[in-house]
Length: 133
Image (cartoon, helix red, strand yellow):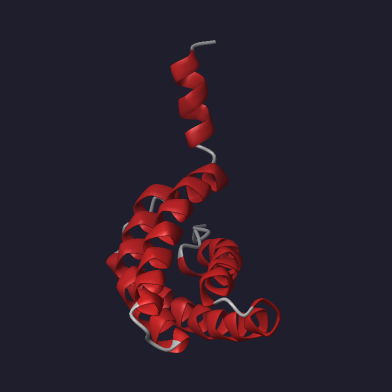
């Protein structure tokens, strides 16, 4: 079997595409979060701005490369999901802070957890394939 075909077959697996694209999106989000933490903003504002900036980047990359759906009308569902993830992120960071006392590490752990959850919510709610009869 051709090595290029093996790589192509692996990339056709949705969870693999999500891991690759989700990693890029998470690095993008986390970099923005860290920048705002570094300049001294409250972690809630850091999460807010990183989420706000990351929404459109993530919508385009998830839609196109992970779920093969570029329907712009889905942005409203996507924004709703990320509003929910914003509050989950804030909650998780506040809980991690109790034990870690490090906003960089707390933010990283929370971002990782929220990224995993976002795959399932996006797959089952935002980019859900409609059954056509």
